[in-house]
Amino acid sequence: MSTANFETTNQLVETTNLSRFTEIFHLCFGYRVDEKYFTWKYLENPAGNLIAFETVNNENGEVGAFYGIIPEEYVINGEKKTIYQSMDTMTHPNYRNRGLFIKLANLTYDHAFKEFGSLKLIGIPGSNSYHGFVNKLHWKNPHNFSYIFQHSLLIKALGLFTKYSVELEQIGLFDEETDVFFASKKYYKSAYKVFNKEVLNWKISKHPFHKFISYKVKKGNAIIGLVILQKEDNNNLKIVYADFLDNEHRSYLKETIKAIASKISFKYIYTWEPTDDVLLQQYKKSMFLKNPYKRGIFSYKVPLILLTRDGDTEFWENPDNLELQPIIQD
Image (cartoon, rainbow, N blue to C red; front, side, top):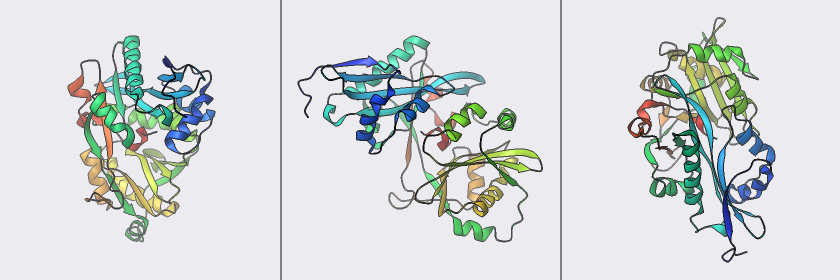
């Protein structure tokens, strides 16, 4: 049905009736979620609730478009700060070509900046929204993450005669030991996302539909690392987070990968190519490869986009300052 002659209103999203977004989500992304998904994503986030604007049809109340950002805690140059991650960008097919995405995004950023006095944003856009972010909203795209991967058969062959010196302890709910790990962990970048048991239980353990397998990496009785894996329907295994207490303990990554392969059946295991040189070298020692071509398996590059409205452009829009892993994705 055409909406060309209908008037619409752009307004701040009220979170009392999130079920009204289920239909536009299905039309935009091709699969259905229920209200519980939006409640989890937008209202149960330990860092706070979303800021979002929507376009509403004045005649029938239909949602024509939606754009929102959610808060996340980062440590930036030693100080804990709230930044925002760009989230669902949705425009109903009947309301496209009206510039609604750009209007709603600017309303959202203006509202957040007015309320908090500063604004740093991070995003992993889809192919449909990338052009709008970069060319019309002036986000920077300073880095694209390549995938690195390895086949399970090679990992098992390499570990055939290995006696592991690390143990993997599966996690149901993240606990106080998780907090001890992150409090003890050494960081090598100036800006990084804050993780603790509360954040990980929300994002990982209580995710409405993604299937995660999480392990504490232990040597003796001490936790030296943490690994979070996403089991995909195609039987691939995505490393959404893997890190250790410090560079010295990162040398246990190879053993950890082999131990994972002894516990979980999968075809390929993969992750983003780390921007941290030491962690990257450990993946290379584990025989992880990168597809150098523009087609074929794991050839897609994941765009990182960044924006700031508080004058700290040079620092925030430089990916070399950021410690990032796929866990930042939705």
